[in-house]
Length: 268
Ligand SMILES: C[S@@+](CC[C@H](N)C(=O)[O-])C[C@H]1O[C@@H](n2cnc3c(N)ncnc32)[C@H](O)[C@@H]1O
Image (cartoon, rainbow, N blue to C red; front, top):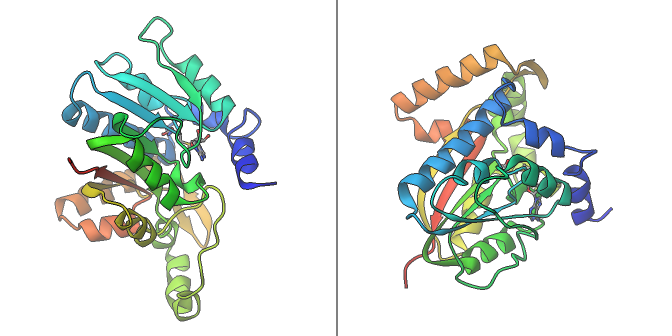
């Protein structure tokens, strides 16, 4: 099955589409749901505080519409694009039918169906892991942004599951001399090393405005999940407080589950 077909299958109604629609409801109390809600809230708050009223905002890979739903009552013109028809269907159902109409279109992050310099802001949460080429997706984000526009891009950190599992961490360190030069296998939905994302960002004329790590994920021992609920949420919150309080940003970034980059296309 080719790459795009795999993505469509993964985010179909028989795949993960329903889960991605439900995960933002408060009934989901596992640590992954908490991190995704924090990712959504951080993004929405950034837009409220930094993107002028009346701006045109694209949610690229909008999924079931969690960000669009929060922005719908606010003074923005909104558009959602996703590759999966089933995710777009969930988005249509989740948005407020009596609220502002939001166009929802099928499209790809590596070939965004809009002209150059269209948007003031593009949200792209959890999508680049499904792109065949992150570099191409960044080309397209840069192309459709107006000069001075911003994009909020998130992905999951490859080293999170290693740092949060003591057995895996020891194994990783011991085998490092043999694995260091091995090229990354690209599979859909992969967690990505920060260095790879930074290298791709640097290929484009973007300015990095902010970087925000969020959450530490499930607690694991030797690959087995020890907790993904109350205890894991408590440990996540505790680690967040300690590392933020001590300003240990580089440790937080190395361990964090979700990474967000906020990138600006420079003004002309
Ligand atoms: C992990 S979900 C995240 C959805 C949403 N952004 C959120 O924060 O809940 C990834 C989404 O990206 C979409 N997607 C995957 N590959 C894509 C591509 N090449 N172009 C556009 N959307 C894509 C999927 O269909 C899915 O809805």
